[in-house]
Length: 331
Image: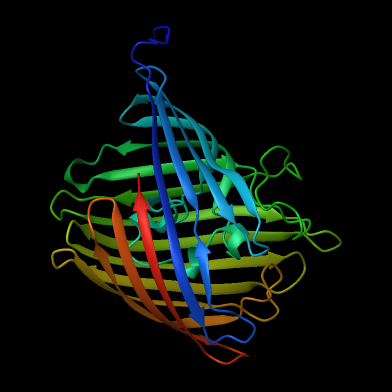
């Protein structure tokens, strides 16, 4: 393997920007109808050499206390040996299933106004370790027309000693255990746009003053994504096994379908999650299920309008109706 050198004349820093602005309201007690600034996402890439690349997502976001915060959501140095082995080091989106690696921190590439609540980010009430800091390897598996690929990751995992701490362990891991995640998926040549896959994630959590908890997340999906048609289907099981206690299994899924008619793209999504009220890691989630329906309208190549209605059934509270109007843009 020859020495890698930087050709300053060829190195380019590319920046793409994405943002959104939303007017929304719902019937949940205590909520208010609001105008909301969404994330302002700067996607930055650079080709350091023929084999090395750098990418980052610098996101400016507003939290519920109305304060702005800057987050480096992804920071990766990537090395490509060949089509079968590409290595990356840094902070990445954990390859749990499909949605978390196909849709990042901008709503621009999403059909709906928001993500399925199974894949909400950690700082937005999400229940998955959607980010991790560590090492990953990806590549093709020689398989002919079956089109097999793999993803293997090892990282710090999520914070578990206290819910008040930053959920992503960016600098120091609170324990010596590491999370591991493996995914295998297929993109068969015979069905353009089809991708089916399976992933399994494993970690051990150490809540302060409580027994350690084994965490295993299984995900299976089948999606068909074409320029004018989209059908996403994904199901998972989150298993938490406290030492010396019962095992808690939390099932969840979503299905989403949409089709374009010129600039108009109507969509429908149904989602479901059912966590025990005694769940040791996210006891407040409970049951959440219901449909969403809406319309995305492409004003031009840089601006899109979205209108979405959602009905959510809860276990121990009144069902919630919500409506959102969003403008998304890229620059």
